[in-house]
Length: 328
Image (cartoon, rainbow, N blue to C red; front, side, top):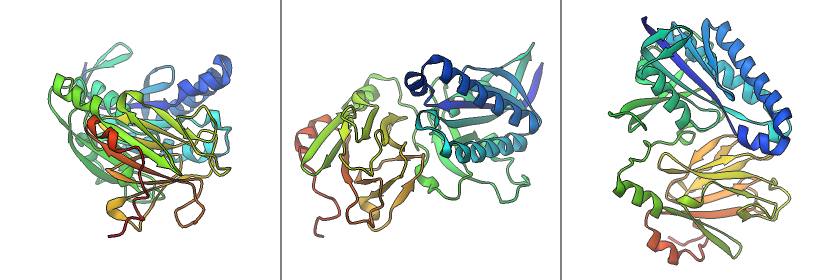
């Protein structure tokens, strides 16, 4: 049967690391409890569970507004409660919503909308909610304590889809600078030329005489205090595994996984800084990253970074001065 529905994909980011840290039995128990709770929230907002997907949930809603309300409640509640959980259990959720015609056969749903919602979920950074334009268009009449804000990320190339699609981000967290939460770019084209550009991209990190450059294929890496990290910062305010640096949808993304937070500032916006609290940030061009303490603290451990789109520039990155100490 062909029906108009809103499809929700809700996925746990970081479950693989949890299984590695805790073992299969304990991690599976936690993942199951989280996904079952997500299912109950969806049902409380008039949603129907299509299936549980190991570390994720696929649900359907008659109204886009109810799907968005469920997604916001899930993110607000989950991010609050995991703050007191042991670090290996602090898995974040990412959500993709798309509305349109769905073919329902038996207990399952099929169609372009289902695929689109799945791709939006993949593209979202932890704690993020990405929606299609068909969902964003229905937010005007949504009744909540506060107006629900959405921000256009433009028309993006979506993996597995022939035509670019309009994508929006739901700005549910007033405490985080949302311009930085989601990667603003489409999936890389699989053409030979685009693949070559991706392989040639790199990011250089430096601090106190130590410098390293990482190609896209070197990522993801972890920044932190323990020797196993790809870039080590020996400071007690820095968590053992403080932040993850990865390459997502054509951009370098830094995600805070620490106890005390991470701060980022860009050279083009010197004087301002953005705080990350278990959230992700797209890194632009060049700037600085403070770990465990804000830039206002003179003793804060600071990493300088610079992004290069051409691997041949790697020879020039053996040492990067602080970008905010350069005169003029």
